[in-house]
Image 1 (cartoon, helix red, strand yellow):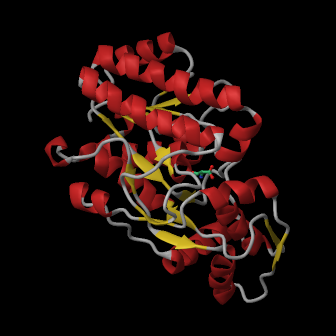
Image 2 (spheres, rainbow, N blue to C red; image 1 turned 90 degrees about the vertical axis):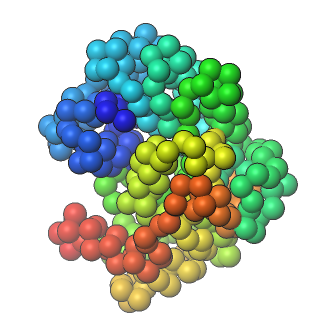
Length: 318
Ligand code: SER
């Protein structure tokens, strides 16, 4: 990877991935692609080039790729699970028509492509405990449908045209820079903001609801390490199970309470979020990622909690 385009650079993952790629490859080598209305700001804007790249506009992707001699695209444009249920046509347009555009440009211009999949690519029929790498993927959400299609289409472009497509199935990503929007796992981010602001957290999921999660630094490292590995090591491509931890609301609450003893949480279950969470795995088996490209997370729930609380306290002057 010499010149990199990040599509969706102002989103939850994109904003931090763009900065991490700039640290590793050089500021001018990494182009922050964004859509009108979600312009880069602050350090993201100042530290390197940016370009309007709407994933649904094939010509805009191609002209940016040609202008900056791009050889790797991180395609992060997507609607998250809850919002995709209320806007299924848009979720398909951005997630799949957009991916088609990215893959076509990559085929013509010889770019490598990373497009994340998710724990949302699994469904109720999937084994929920130690979910295997290769297993049943019959999701009941539009988000899941787009993610399974992402995996299939990315593998197809690799098999048929030799495009270097690679991907991971991200669990819920916890971060303190850009908030996520409209996901089922967002509660595990929101709970830290409530704890630091001294608010009671209203948990939208039932006690006992297990889902895989990961702290942002590990997620960034996963995306970059996978794209850097010698492809001869890869038996799989789209997509690898990865996880760092699995917890339920009462467990993250108890962990935060160790550091914020006055913190309170109450339950007010959101039926849509609960049904989505119930259809997803409790914990993934990520052995293939560990064996094929050396995946290994650094943060567990406790070390992540310490770091999240410290960063958010600094952010809100608490
Ligand atoms: N974080 C996503 C969501 O909750 C899942 O990958 O929609």
